[in-house]
Image (cartoon, rainbow, N blue to C red; front, side, top):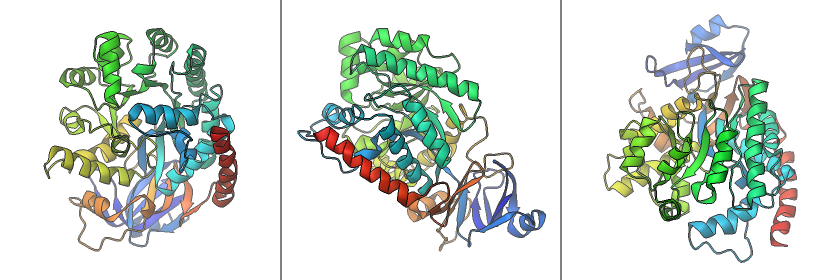
Length: 443
């Protein structure tokens, strides 16, 4: 057993939102008690005690849209690549990278990403993977890293026709194979979806094949209207909006997640709502790719289940929170925007969305919930109560404020030292092998 005590405990439990001098008791992979430190310590005298030192303790973060495959691109300069627009960014940088990834590089990308996740207090991710250099078995390479580091993961492979129909079919079957494997393993730390790039790189034939090979209780993870080019393609080639095309192939539904949704209209929002489909906002990536600002505030106001992700741009969910907060204020020219909507996405909706796949309840420090707990180095120097905890997080923390990360009841990092892996040795190995990848890309 573990007891985390002497903290300002933000529970996200509406009945008991903030506990001063609070403690969380963990048995196995679940929280068994939350309350006053002295009471919890007395009840669980034989538990390992971790002192939060009067700093903030809170539920670990969930990232609803990651890109593990992008991890080894940090600082990469591809010869001849100039980022002119969204399509040149995709083809010149990201598709060039993924065409050179084999399963070893995919595994290294996953290790690097998961290390960053733990250091930023993220214990659950939904990843969207592409490695057209080696498709078969690539999701196993990620799963191996996830289990090694201890981060709960829902994985999928990015179906696309962009490198030919043979690889497109391989990508469909990689999803189908991994979904079947995950179902048979019954491991609540690993789940699977059917991944798709975006409709402008997917033919009707491929949509049908993917639908035929995806069980009815598994949804799709697809980029939607991330760039205006995606919308133009759909209108010109198919004479319809993107969400309508997805609807034609029975892609929408409560288990499906649409990333971005920048260029969607009111009709499409209605259909997303009617089908109970999920949406993920990725503010930094949208800004960095000059794609535009999505109507995220309207989506939340329409009660469309909308969460927050990073698109691989960062692994710091607080950073994503900060950027979303100012993006929508700037875009809408109103200081009232995003104050309530973005924390609702991050602290409530992400957990609701994740629990459409994972069985154990997520997102709260509450009895029966997953033992996903982080300790920060943030000590409130102004009065903090249940009404201003989000303001303290927004203006007082970042991901690296996290000093200890507990995921599924296991201490993954303690006092900023990773416990499941030799971080220095692993990163040194990754750096050495990444040079070979870069030489291969620019050779």
